[in-house]
Length: 187
Image (tube, rainbow, N blue to C red; front, side, top):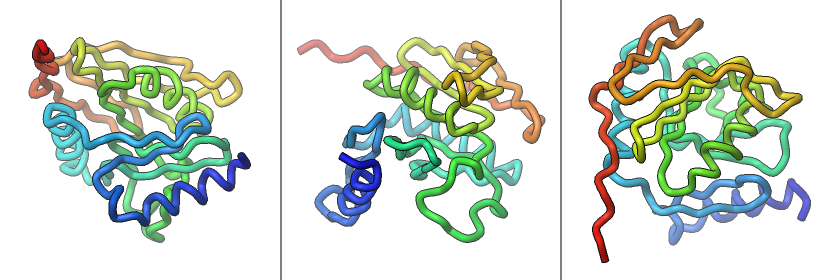
């Protein structure tokens, strides 16, 4: 299927009221539909959005992103940019207007750890923060190398550590309120 056809299908699915409760993304040439995230996931996104908002950054949850790289149209858990870069209200938002993306790992680790990281680097998004409530780890990826589809730098952190964001941010994110996912109940 042509890349344009995938994007057209995605636009159509987004118009269906029956799918309003689902997160619909295009990841590596496949349309992926997921139920809403769990409370601990959403709590982390909310804490990060509040901190960034206090510093006059626009932190947009579930924003659809697009770039010249075909086969992808992810909805980052949090897309961080400035009002000036979104003033025209374009949707999907071009990746070159984004300063930071955040993904909080849910069930599909492969998507966040490999596929989205590759696409964010290929799309030259300067910073990618990966938060994993399964084990309390975090990773701040920077210095994208679009030719090798990776970030050149990856700094590890643990829940509770402050995450120092480089320019243009120049402040730390507080992660002391982040919680691990509780154990899954036995069936």
